Length: 170
Image 1 (cartoon, helix red, strand yellow):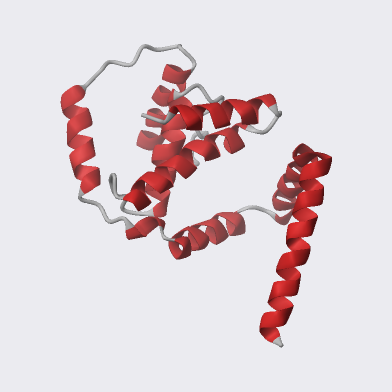
Image 2 (image 1 turned 90 degrees about the vertical axis):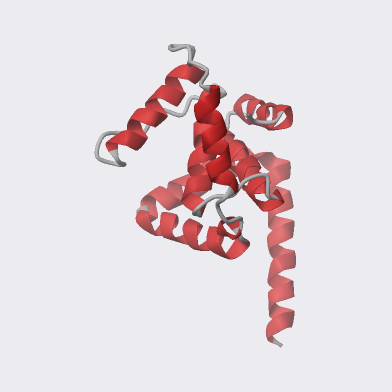
């Protein structure tokens, strides 16, 4: 179950006109923190991301399930059920025994799977699968939704980082 703060952050993202994937990112972020705190583990960064996306769909984020052929059929069906539950098209049946079993299995999984290094590798691989045009469009949209103050702050941060990296090389 996601925290109230996570749901609030996702709602704020929606009000600001940010994409559904950005809203879902709040849930993924929370899931990564849960694994790092040791509340439970994950076999891979992809599993932690998948759990976060599922929670986002169940919480009502308008993130449709992947199309046929993109992922395994079982994954797609699961995402479809989560999406329908979040959109109030289906009333999810409570299954305490299954829920407890899943939790106990996750507790046995490693927590190192969401280290900075593993997440960096996952992000690079995901970016590599997208076309340069798609990456550019995403960056352009991100800059637009940032707003004037956000862009200014990002520019200052980039300048500081540049200076820091130059010092390190010297």
